Length: 136
Image: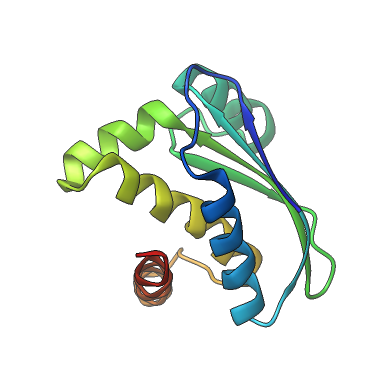
């Protein structure tokens, strides 16, 4: 089950389409879905989580808490809508494209992909692009 929650003045368009896309991505990666809760929030909300739980005093676009067991995915993904808007402008892409990239980025972490090294980050980016093309 995919749940979308809002802690800021933002509503995701096409929740059903995005939810189906996420479910398809998880299945394509040979994982099973239990539950993912997406929480769309602002910078302040996400910054507080970043400081409290990760001890990082920085702004970020996404934080995911992974409760998965084996190949069964469960977790909470927090996304700062403000950060996504700013990143979209910085990367010269649409807000929707950047938002979808961040949405699937969290899922790919749950599927075992990392992005700490340059090599891993490139694999992650390639997977993001692949699944973004699946949505379009």
